[in-house]
Every structure is written in structure tokens, then in C-alpha cells.
Image 1: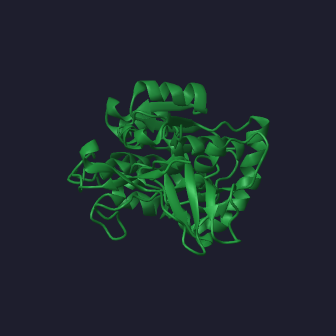
Image 2: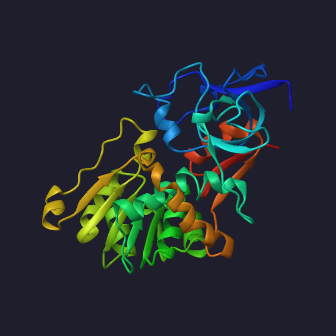
Image 3: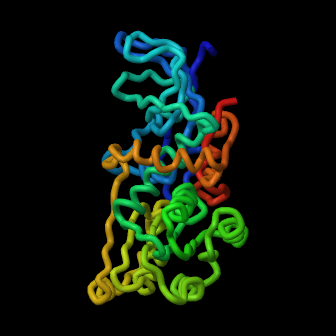
Length: 333
């Protein structure tokens, strides 16, 4: 174990896309766990789209010149509580640092399954997978044979949604993404039946071409023009699962397209958003559902793994700019 620790601080509020100048790596002495606490040496870090929203001056957002928070997996290297054993690997939310001091209440112990890599506890078995699973089973209440449209389909949430939807018996899957290469990846690798690059024209036209018969469920990670297009294309009694609004995170001054509110009434549509933190009780159900498929090979995690904590800011910015596919995870060297 090293004698020093590194932490990433946010140093400025970005307007638009963040840049490396908005962050600083801060070195300090290795922290000592207080009585009742434990020291964790982090092994994997999650970078997520919601981090961008938290960088703004919003309630509950990140403080300037202070350690950033995020999901992480780490090994307990020192403990001053019998409730946390040295050597065990735990999940916690004090990421963006090489070492974290935690209490027993701040960790979640990870079950061990042969053949299941640690990184999936930040992707399909972590918050990303839980979001996709809750969206399909609790919010959309997906039924076998129903067709889906997913925006932001090449990200961690979009790929997990497609993989889970297939296992749940969904019908046709259509996705949107930010490049032709990613659209091809979605149909060749992830399992989408059709995908389009949203830069290629008006969202309503692209969606009508990809889903000429409409669809039953829209899982929305993007908002904006694609949400407006989906409202017009959904079938009667369709459902919209609102997960994120990535299209507005880095463009705060953009004009938000309006959708036809009459469609919501006339087609009996339902739109519901949610925060995954309110569904922690579904975590074990996710394990029961996903782990057998991971072990059999029917479920493949879609991940971009970046080696080296020193690259965590670059990994975050690459994810925001759409340069990665699937869930972006940073791994200690």
C-alpha cells in the first residue's frame, strides 16, 4: 500500500462541457481510519452522466475545492471496527480518490459469484444495471413482446436496458446514438434491431423510419427533441420512462423542444421519472435475475474499462463526449 493518497477536486463550475481545467488532483498523506471506521483502497471507479449535472451550482451538487463523490469498489486495508473485516471488497460512494475512509453504514458488501468479474458491480449489477432493471420492471412494467425505443442507447444505461429487455422477452428494440459507428455497434453487438445517429436529421423523421409501426415503451436518457419525437410515435397506452436529460447537461441555454401534450391524453400515455436510490430494495432481485445469465453467457456486460486512476478525468470527459460505449469504468493499475 502506498503512503500517499490522491483525490480529485472540482475547482470551477463549467459552462457547457467540462474541461480538464475544472479539476485538480490533490495529494495528501494516507488517511487513518477513526474508531468505528475503515480505510478502503479503491480498485474500480464509476464515472456517470449524472456527475455532470452535479458539477453545477445545484442543491446537493458537488462543492468546489472538495473531493468529488461517486460509486467505487475497494478493498479494506485497515479497520477499527469489528463490523468491517480487513481484506474484504466493498461498494461505497466515496469515489474519485485512491483511498476512502468509510463507516459500516456507508458500504455494501458484495456477494461472490464464480466467473463474475468485479467490474460488473459498477455496470449491470450496479447502479447502471439497477436503473435499467427498475425502469423496465417497475416503471414501464414491460410485457413480453412489447417494442422499445431507447435514447442514449450506446451508453451504460442504454446497453443494459437492451440486454435486460431481451431477457425479459421484449419484441423489437430501436436505439438512438451519436454516430454511425455506434449505431452499427448497437445492431451488431448489443442486440438492437435498428439504430440511428440522431445527427442525421430531425428526430421525428429518423424515429418514424426506424420504428414505422410505433412502439410501446420509450426509455429516455436524453430528453429534448427525441422525447418530443417519441411522444408522437408511441402507441396507445405507451409508457415513457424518464431516466436522464443528457442533451441538456452541457447545453444549458438550448431551447427545449415542446411535444404535443394532447397526444398524452388522446393516446393514454404515461410518463414517469425515478431516482434509482429509491429502489435499493430491488438490488437482491437484480442479482437473482442477472447473475445466472452472466454465468451462462446469455448476458454480456458492455463496458469501456480505462486503466489508471490518473485517467479518471479523461475517462469522464470521453464519456460525456460520446467517445465510449457501454458503462465507463476506471480500474486501478
